[in-house]
Length: 185
Image (tube, rainbow, N blue to C red; front, side, top):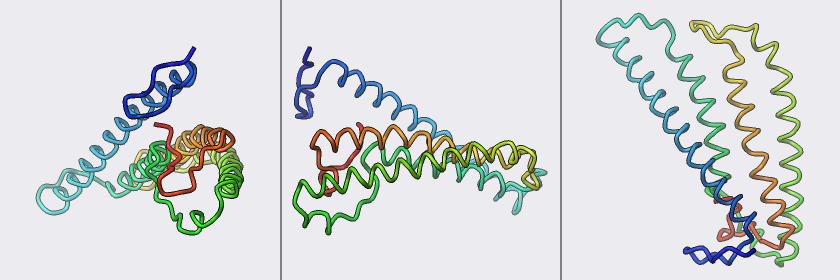
C-alpha cells in the first residue's frame, strides 16, 4: 500500500516507511523535550550557583559538578538530535565536486565507519559502568556512572540515525551535499 504524498512535497511512501517516519517524529519530539528539561535544569543550577556565591548561602557544596554532568548529557543527546534532524554542521565543498555515484559510495563507507566506531564506543561505555559506579564525583552524591550513562545514551541514539543514513545511501539518496542532509525527520 502506498501512502499519500507528504504535504511538504515528499514523494509517496509505503505504509511501513510512513509508520517509521511517524515514529521518528515522535522520538525527535521526545528528545526535544528531554533537551528542554536538561537546559532548564542547567539554567536552574547555574542561577542557584550565582545566587549562592554572590547573595545568599544556599548551602550548595559543589554545583559546578552538577553543571558538568548536565552538560555531558546535553551534549551527547544534543548531538544525536542534531544528526537525527539533519542539522549537524557539514563541510561539503569537496564532496560536491565529486560525481554523484562516488559521493554515495563515500557516504556509505563513512556512515559504516561511524557505525563501527559507535558500536565500539557503546561497548566501552557499557563496560566502564561497573567501575564508574564505584567512583564518586567529589562534592556531589553522584557517581561517575551518571555522565557515563549520558554518553552511552547519546551513542545508542546515534546508531539508528546512521543505520537509516546507510539505508538511504544504498537506496541512492545523496546526503553528502549541503542540500541532502541525512536527517530522519
